Image (tube, rainbow, N blue to C red; front, side, top):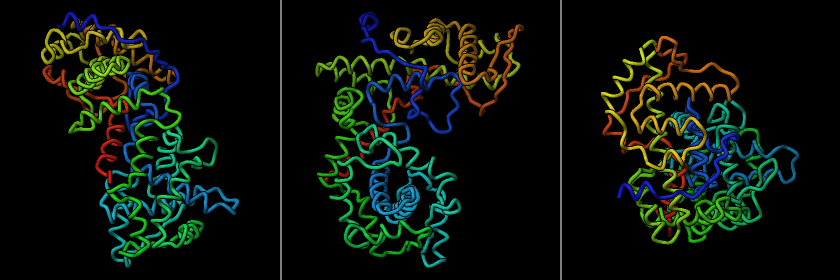
Length: 435
């Protein structure tokens, strides 16, 4: 069986690693090996619209409603509608926190602190686009506008151009589904809310008022059939401009047919998905999923080993190799046989071969070379790790101390998302909220 598996072919897919997908960036990550370019390019043929941070259906709902309200608020104004959107984002965040107990949204820390403090102020909070009232250090770039607009545009929800505005289909959806829910607290077509969003500062009551409850109804855990169909088409299936040319809807159907207890992928789960794809005659999906598995079998241990090496400044290569061998054994049997052909470029196949053959001295040197290449591509910065002429490690950038995973942990190791958790989160939210 192993020999047969080694002979399996992966359909060729061109990976463009010069222009990094800005929607792939993992916030706060330090990527000294440039692994992000590999896993994002590997995941994009399967999931074309979502990013690593767009994992909240409520986040997309907040964006759509906010952009529509901001457009209405600026219909007869010369001002940029961004300020109105920021106020709505704050209001929605306070309501999600106070009414629904949501935790996974941008600005939670400030929202929770200010909501707690508001208890001694009659339950009132101040909303404004002014910096001192924003719920993030820069709400424009770090909030929904900065993180969800591009994925929403890729999903056919936001039109091209600036400022961001909904497509006609998305605007009609908001008008038909969400504006009526706001009427009980804010009047027909939410006209009183639209008027409030034009103000420089809004005082909002977190108590159980009709205004608060009408906003809370936007985020009801039970969704109408219209909502489910709309979000499934645009977010799960990629929308009218699906850049995967129909692969994402089929991949999503496979994930939905085999629900997982975790949004995070794993090797056994994805291999089962690949088998399911083959059984349906979707060999292109099966090949792409196996490519993901093959790449991660190298990217995950290489990334963790590199972090470990950054904590070994001054150590001799022989000593480091001995430590690696004591943890991982003479070689890693978990490296997928397809990894060398699936990984792009020159360095990554060499890393795969060194891991497979247990050539740890070569592995250390190639990791250092890979880091030097990445630093040059980023503008000529010095490499974080070097191997000196005396075969000692010279570390210029000391990351958080990282231990080395045991050899028996490597087969189950999974470190990079490939955008899969975000798609699974969309499926889970739709399934749980289906009326």
